Structure formats: C-alpha cells, structure tokens
Length: 96
Image 1 (cartoon, rainbow, N blue to C red):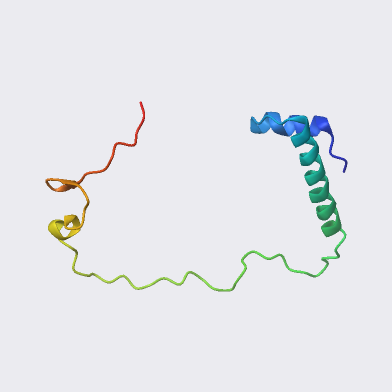
Image 2 (image 1 turned 60 degrees about the vertical axis):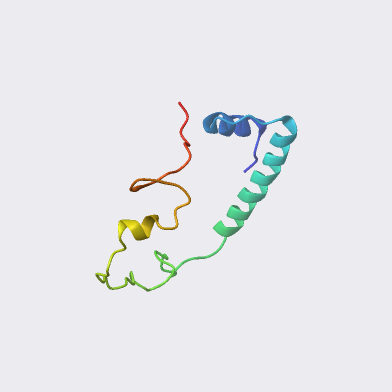
C-alpha cells in the first residue's frame, strides 16, 4: 500500500492535527514502514494456530479483603503541610 499526501492530509484532518511538509514527509516514511511490516505479517501461515485471547492462563489473582483498624482523622492530618480544621488544605488548581 502506498501512503500518499492525500492520505496523510485525511488522517491529519480526522485527528485534528496540522503538519508541516517536512513532518508529512517523515510521517509518510513512517507509515510506509509500518504498512510494509504489516504486509509481511500477513504472509505468515497461521493455519492451525489458535487465536490468542490472553497472554497468560492466569485468572484474576485477588488478595483477600481484611478489615483493619482505620486511621483517625487526627492521624491522617498529622503530617499535612497545610490543614484547615479537619480538612487538607491544597492550592487552588481549577481555572474558570
């Protein structure tokens, strides 16, 4: 498959990206290498090979839930750099 400027322009438009001509040329080269690799993979005979669904046969290995003594509010706030009564005080980080 040949990657063209038009294909890169279409991809850029779909992804809402802008590329310089130099970036387009580099992208064309990269995409050409990628499609060549995929075409090589398509040549591999996979008859009789079962599709791989998971990388391992392991199932979810979960730890047992244990009820432990929670820390108190005072313990939680003890090392806080800044606090306001019973709350952690943090710098404002939202923008209007």
